[in-house]
Image (cartoon, rainbow, N blue to C red; front, side):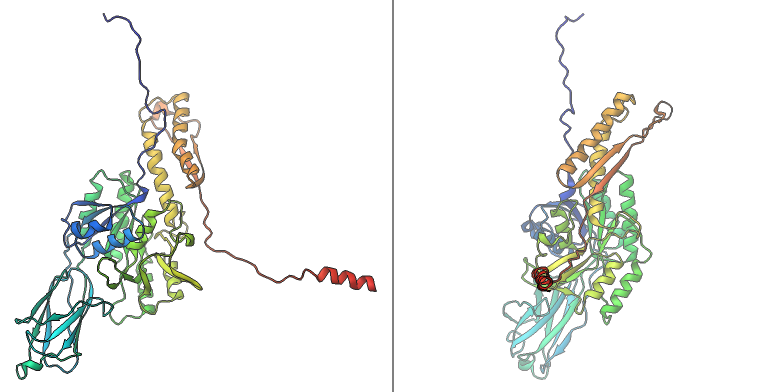
Length: 476
């Protein structure tokens, strides 16, 4: 028998410490030229993108998010099973030489090849632009074999001289232009990449699916959001709407998107319909792309209770102009009514701002805005971890009181941090825990109100009116 002594037991949980908060972290799924398919790449700085991700839509979205404030992003490359396409070459000028383009584009390009000096193969000089002439390469001599690979694009242009007059094949001022679309991932490929994130132990606030998408993808992501919820992952998804098709007006594009979203109702998905001409700090080019990358960066950089369009946060960086060309306030309002994430400008105030962080929820839902979605998601994560300590514990009056107090702790921290106005944990009385083994608790949160519209009444006042009236009456 052991000798009697003083036994010390160490109690844990008295500090009521909280689990790590992933609200400042998000994940991305998209097509990449370099990142291995189906593996998580963790990034904390935009300078890591070129080496670890390469180029393409995923790299562009990562860059935009870091520029807008992201600090940590988990990226998963999806299989590019929908290859990009190269359009026909359009020639303007008097030269009889031709230019052909081949390859698999790594991204979307509006390419222009301009002849700077008249000549044939191994003589003429040209330059090229990948952003429709907004920025240009240096001067390049047409190769002797006519083949030139545009660096980092996956494309090769081939110059073919004029057989009748080779030295005059390409004349100064000739312009050859073509468009290329970015590769993309199918619903199946995106789902496979999402599986990688779901099967990991990583925590994140939301998943941004990079690349143009339609209602089929949105429905799939809504289902994945429901799956995540049922697996104790309290997150939402962010998708990107498509640009107008060739020949489609802005009005027709808005009507098409509105119709496509009409039957969608989910509290787990945002769809960004905002496009803009963005100044890319990695390439120096000005390119039109979806602004979801910038939006995701802003959302990750702010508190869960904050509106991403809060004007005092400052204008979104990198945006030169909204797109498509011709979009106006009426179009933005219609897209907002259809529950898309949009961007806007303010009269007399510089810059571009998020209009609303819309969720594709039903009109009666409490979670039509990203800030309410994120607040409840954070509360759910923190409260669940706090409640797990009591799982299979005693359902005695003392145990219930301790349980209620423990759940109130993370909510109190959120109140102190200004993330919510108040919260209450209620345990309904009369529960037969002994028979059912189940305890029900209710949690109610008071969110931070957002001033979405401000009305200021302005009028004129005459401080002398009363005095003048009194003087007139005295004289009478």
